[in-house]
Amino acid sequence: MKGKVVQFRRGRKTMTERHFLLDFGAKNRSEAQKSVGKEVVWISPAGKAIRGKVAGPHGNKGLVRAIFEIGLPGQAINTDVEIKTSQSDSPKKSVKSGVEMK
Image 1 (cartoon, rainbow, N blue to C red):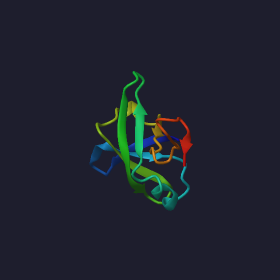
Image 2: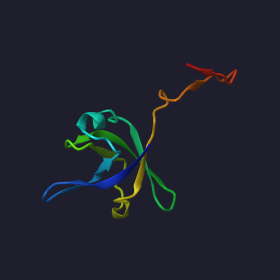
Image 3: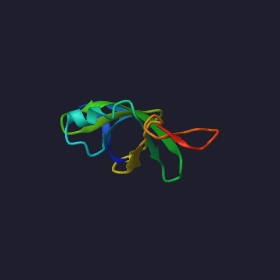
Image 4: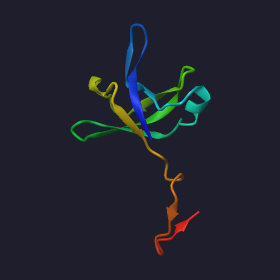
């Protein structure tokens, strides 16, 4: 699932370098709450992946807060970020037979 980096999480006089606001197309706060705890990955133009985790919703318009392992560069604003689905969401395959299990 794709999203967009909207902005740093910031206050009037402070800016938190590792915290970012992301938009995944959720309509309201309750839809944004469903993505809490999922892993997000931003890929730099050089191919380096910076990982983070969705910490919680931000406001009532469907934005979420994500905390990254290191801060993203300023060029990351308005670029795409990908939310990873957990392995429990994907079908499991048996190692011996290669058949999908549910």
